[in-house]
Amino acid sequence: MLSFNEAEFVAQTESLVALRPAIETLVDRLVDEGYDNVLLVGAGGTYAQMWPYEHLARRSSTLPVRAAIAAELVVSGDARLGERTAAVFTSVSGTTDDSLRAIAYCKERGAHTVGFTGHADSPVAQQVDTALVSAPKAWPFDIQLLLFMGRLLSRRGEFEGYHRLADEIAVLPRVLVDVARQAEPAASAFAEAHKDTDYHFLIGGGNLWGFTYLYSMCILEEMQWLRTTRVHSAEFFHGSLELLEEDTSVVVFQGEDETRALTDRAEAFARRVSKDVTVFDTRDYALEGISPEFRGLLAPLVLDTVMDRVSKHLERVRDHSLDLRRYYRVMDY
Image (cartoon, rainbow, N blue to C red; front, top):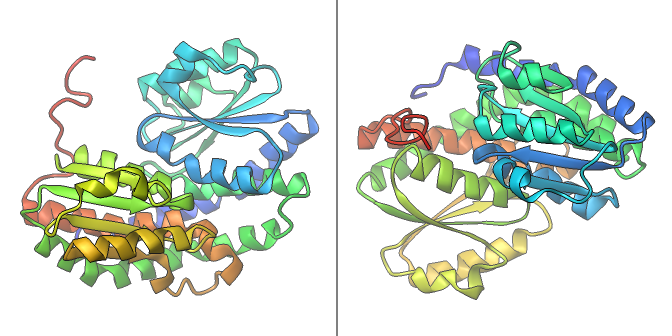
């Protein structure tokens, strides 16, 4: 597979799975000590990656759980933020300035701050109250966040299948390698067909809306300098559909939760206008060892693996490094 170090990928994913005991111990302590609301704080991709777990809590629990943009939180505040708040942060490098300011802001208001990162000596790891450290560069944070939120809902009697889910997560290092291998031909074909495409229209919903936003803004825009539109499948018919033309590249992210029909509806309309509609569907992957009832919860992680293959092939055909930046962490802002 192109630019895929299987041994490194497996080791990184195993390091995420291995955090289960520490995550469960932390959640049990937070519950026992009476923390009664959760703030999921991120910036850019790490903010978008919080949305599936806010979504899970909203549809399954009465616990107040909300995602927040780090920089906005600091200037706008949050009325519930206080001594009974668990504020969760994620950062691959552990150096994100907006997140560091938000950590300080939350701690000043008495919240217990939790940081998931890949570097124990990073500023994020050093500043949060509880740091849970994986292998360097391990991404995405879905495993940690699903374990955290699943355990929390389980303790509240709102997720009775958590222990089976957590046990099955142990097979993910192997399962995701299989996903990457299966996705490789489609990823290469998409990149070859779109090496000269400078605009993509992305659609996703449910717990894949965060990934849709992330892939649009943080990969295609930030890492490939391509223009995009991103729209939630439930909002597709309220404005953005007017941008479709016969040659518009439409990319649909389809998962397996209760919102699937909304994305099907948007896809069906897009095909009536555009001759260039590509669907990346988690249902196409076997995920051996994962129970049908949990497949939907793992959709963001599966799509991240699939689209990483697409990203690497776009990098190849466009001769545009995914690490190249003009402004991000290059200029002062």
